[in-house]
Image (cartoon, rainbow, N blue to C red; front, side):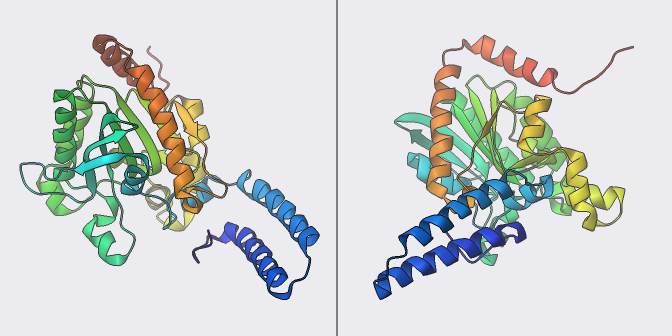
Length: 320
């Protein structure tokens, strides 16, 4: 899928794809046999893809996670589930459209979906606040967590946010409290929780809906206490150092798997999830069905204890 939007390191791949496409069209239009030449170029394309995508820097993976054609939360819900009913509002202040959620079915299994939602065009981006939630967004999520617990339905969380919204109004309405209370509540919820990091996972904005029994992460997503640009602005006072910050933060899926922060890396379609939404959604759905089947075998008390122990064991520390 060549959608006209490309990252610098994608350019050689897209140019070769176009060359192959043009050659196929020419072969059909002029009735000339070019099958051997086309096969040769397709082999070259496979080698080029493997070479580029097996050597991506951390910063390049961050760029992929932000690709404007990458599937967002509602795309995954639409492709994976049936009978989805979106629920709105926090019953306190407003309906934050940066957070979406509601009941749906995965192969007939009832599930509560919750996630951050970005926008495609300028109007949608403003409406969704670029996927950055206000306190009412986190309180909406918390309301849905309790609703899932009431009906004994597992929770699936899709994370994709550049962070919680840092505006004055959000702070006045208790942004930090909303995030902190969500974290506390998610340790108390008595149904399975599976978290999938589908794109960006920045700071408390992600952690505010990010506590789960299993944390899955796409291979070209990122998850960190701060964005590379934010880190660069603090350390070097220049966000041009974001690539250097990304290396230092160790925010990619292999880094986090090694540190024990996530439980599994989900492979993406060739060239990234933005090139094949259907394949990306199938990967998530298959993994969710398997994980939920395993978690639902656990007694509730064991599930909650293991969830708490999972996060207590994160990080390296020394007691004197």
